[in-house]
Image 1 (cartoon, one colour):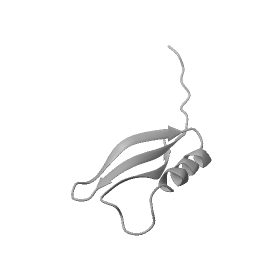
Image 2: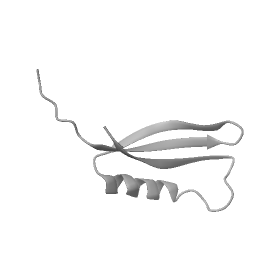
Image 3: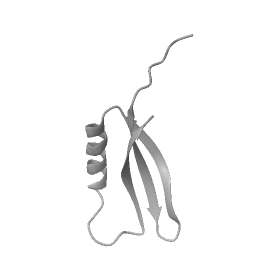
Length: 67
């Protein structure tokens, strides 16, 4: 039997939000380092405009370490 070494991963959830329907996790991504996960979140969320939330939008949340 092969021996496996557990690896620490960093989780990012991509969330779809729609007025009247709520939110759901559309996709989960895992990164092998924290700075890359945080940079992905900042870049992805930069597409959302400031001000009131639109009727439909996507956002990402950094969830931290996952194993």
